[in-house]
Image (cartoon, rainbow, N blue to C red; front, side, top):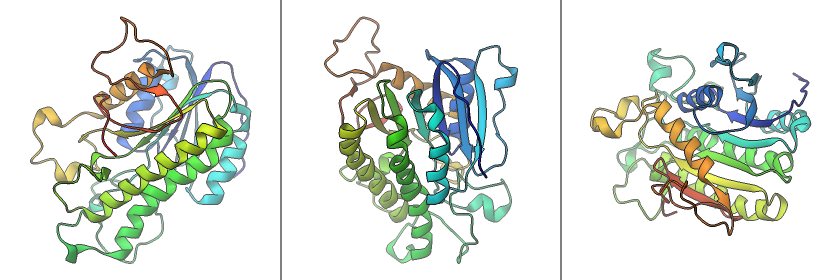
Length: 299
């Protein structure tokens, strides 16, 4: 469906995969102005027909919110980015929150949608998507579904956003990744499909950053590890997680926004206002893989 957009004054944030728990918390934090920001317009994108976070109307902050439904096909993403052309030069934050780990909630009916922002809407030719504990558990169809959600869909956004975000304004594109996607940090094994899909995502982000450095020098790409967050995606795996290591989506959103606000121009010097707990990250034409603490992770 064709949609029309009118650019208003102020910066724009795109929240993609807006039905996920972390995405909802990011939207709420931006609306409440929990972090220093000049964002004045939010555009949420998900498979849902209506926005699941409707706090803008209740907020006294001068932020407008618009929701777009997208099926995440290549054609739909390309068309949507064309329709967003009125915002070219105004987009300063992008949050790509698409992802999948399992489908337990779809099977049990305990939650609508999926364990995350699902990008595979067709009926799957198998019953279960779950992290594999041994080689015999690997299922090619389940693996394909995870790559579709965790790798291909975020890459399609990076492909089509490059012309839209290029300009003089600084823009940070945050993509939700995971520490288990780190090849050098893999000491436990298992979770074959999820690990591989996130490792592939990290490589695509790192590779895309090289091209963005030529075509959109104003953009910083971030692969973000949120830690174990109390959302449906991690629900089946929370039993052995210490309470202090299980984060609320609100906490993770606040950390990510603070990290974004701390990113500096390349060559700039540190100041007394800098957060000493966050590693120095710059608009340097390179991708950064960081965790919820703002600490760099080895690729």
